[in-house]
Image (cartoon, rainbow, N blue to C red; front, side, top):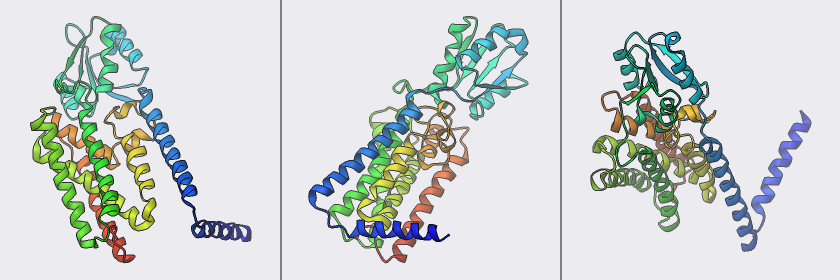
Amino acid sequence: MGAVTETARGARFGLARLREHQWTPVERAILISAIATVMGALFVTSYSLALGDPVPHRIDAALIGDARTHGRTVRAMQEVAQGSLDFQPYASVPAALHALDEQNVYAALDLTSASPTLYLASAAGASVARVLERTSAADPAVRVVDTHPLAPKDPSGVDIFYLMLVATIVGFISVFQVRANASGLPLRHWSVFVVGLALAAAFVFVLVDGPILNRLDLPVFESWGILALQLVAVSSFASIMLVWLGRWAILPTWLFFVVLGNSSSGGAVAPPLLPEPFEFLSQWLPSGATVTALREAVYFPDYQHARPIVVLAAWALGLFAVMLVESRRLARSPGA
């Protein structure tokens, strides 16, 4: 016990000496360069592991009919999915298609029709659909039907990911730039700035990607609200880090939203192709919840789920509340 106490004291003493050290401009430049390099290495690592070589892990699929009567088709589908398909029996094609609409499954294989039919929803996960579409090459008897195709101008399904990404970047960059160039804002004004930025920026992003560029058929008000919540979450998190860490606030913000959040969002690669823990985190971090909520608003308007909205709102409101509480507790505005 005494050794542990001495170690803790030594660590605190070392940190105190580090804080009190009079850093020269050259030393500061070297330190910042080293930290930036480490952050970049973590970025490369997370994106390479999560997105560099997407491999199916567990793909839920519906099965209508007896797999024993079409063993070749089932084997072909499992081969292209590297054995990751988890078939669940469904009594009828309408029931399986409803599960596909609800995004409870990523594919439905009908073995009761004249020729085997594979139903996919590329909008639910373009990367998963691309993997499973190869079934028709392995077994030419299979007919492939896309029940929820992607927008013609977004065949890879990444525009929603880009919307989330730009909201994330604008959220924390704006916070740090306002702190650097318009310092002195009291907490009340800072709170108005966070909310105002979220509402204004989100509205512009929706108009640009929707009506102006006509990339996606975005429901304006719904998409506006989703992106605004993401911006509030990012801006509030960055503001909390400013209160706690000051000039080093960008480090945890970068780690949480860029290194971890974006790579696990499921926007560039669908969750079933992400390794753990990215697949699990996909629907519980604000970035992944934003991607899911936007995708359902655009491609599954009749089958939207409450979970991504609840998760995103909980992050946004929770972080905003923590920002207010911590600023008052420490008597320090994020903009001070």
